[in-house]
Image (cartoon, rainbow, N blue to C red; front, side, top):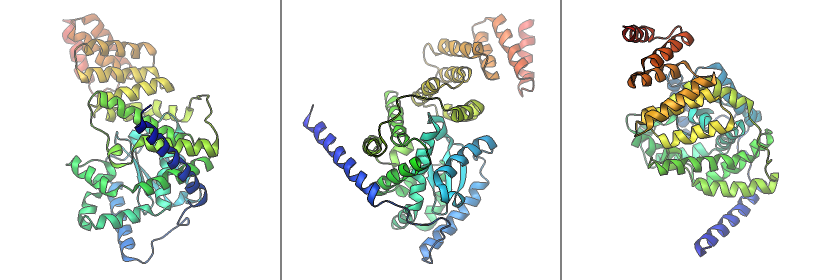
Length: 392
């Protein structure tokens, strides 16, 4: 064991002891439920600008309108927020990144990439608890005052909606703004610890507060192997390994060791199974195949419908297009259709792959199956054309 490693371990231990004391003796909410801004001009101005951004966000095509998905996320927020529940308005945004954020006005946005990466509802609740703690500790106001010293106020809010949704003409601008808006290490620690307390008080598993960071580390490691860029969340937040270490020390001390039994989460599995195409299509479109593979492997472990997972394995290999990927895609699509829970597109894409191989009978069989399970398919005319052509 190297001296550097020993020093790092000792530092983490000291930090763990320090944050335990901080969490138990000093941390609490700085505002009451129903909080309204003080008369200070900058806070009033901040609220006005965020309310304008919220009006714009309400019109965004990126908002998820599905009632089941929204009710699931709203329920987690209300349970963790407790008496603050009515202060928040939650917006579920279609973005494959791992992120959630909270504005000073109570406008919370959750990216769908957070749901995709979760292996339990507790992990989603952990991230939401962290954001609620930022809100009740007034970190957004403090961050806004810091930001004003670097950028003109007009520039801040011109870029603000792009930062909320993660979509902009310039990824660099969004990353820069999120970096400016990122909280200090002390604020992040406060939100980690108070958020964990909220998690436990809401009867969620407090061990999820560090488990979610270990999961993010594993994804970044998988991405690094494929030489993919670090995600925005990791670029704008403190080191996940440090956070996981001190949170594990804190949680194990105050709440005991984790339950070794891994129990399936029926609520999360229902959400994933019923919305898988919506959630995973956005992830697939990133063309970050290392991350996508890590997510699909996790979904296999937690019990997402095999037909859905194998369909997206097929999609991933088909899009990647490396040597041998066509065979891997065919094998994955075949597993999908054999499972009995395949989406209609699995039959269609398998048909196209057989068509490329000049296996006309199997191509026709899969195209017909596609039309049988998807009678209202928008591309029915094209598929029927292929069937007629190949029948000649």
